[in-house]
Length: 338
Image (cartoon, rainbow, N blue to C red; front, side, top):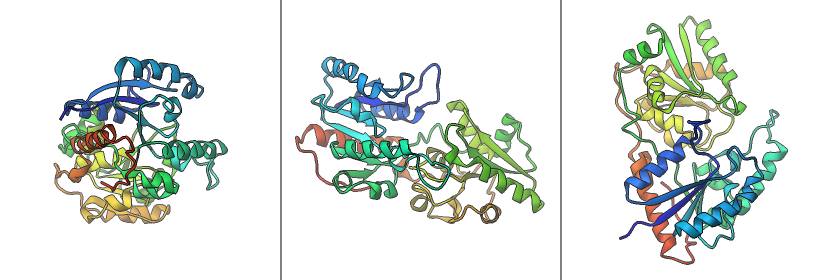
């Protein structure tokens, strides 16, 4: 059967100025093309301001006329604003903040995020499929969009993110080999990642006499990220809220256990004690307890990423979804989960 033609419309995609921004979208496009899907990418808003969600419609229409896609795949909940009315059915992948909102620092979400959530809910209700990162996100959708929703997180390239020598990774990064190393993937643009809690966990371990190194990955080139995971004894996830953090699955692919709060898909993903611990507390002492309870394992650890989360399997499911939409003018049958 001929593979569908897919226009990817996204507000996140690597560029010369921001080579790591939206790298997971670029990797998904590569995985789709490896399966024979013909794709083209149109970026919206990125570097142009939020007005481009509306102003970018003209570019999208031109691309639709020239490329003639069977399906449009939108990434992020606001992006369909540039797509509605194009005459082509669309799938939308929700990423987390578009549905959960950004913290206002007082236990709620900002006023701007509340408006954004309303846009996301409305655009999701008009889609043919809604792809979310976790079951918690699916439950947050209103009934119409929820009936179209499927849990289908971003896949991980298990060839790029694979186990390797912990000692070699520490030598490569200049990290002391005689310390407990905690990996932490941080973005200064997202205070909800809670670097402050990770630092408090490190301080708690040091107070207990455990020599600890907090290895923070901030704006690290994509090709170097596997070294950061391999160097760590565990990955720490302290976020206030998440969709389905890519770093968790990438760490597991490298054989690194994860300790984190019950955000995003962590409660569903971390099922085996070897994979890590889910701690229902922000208390640094509780998180420190979970870290010291982990088995460090051998120098080269076994991969722990469940097969459904490999990029090729996620891409194969996407192809099925695209075909069902291209071949079904209603395309609104409720679907299941990964």
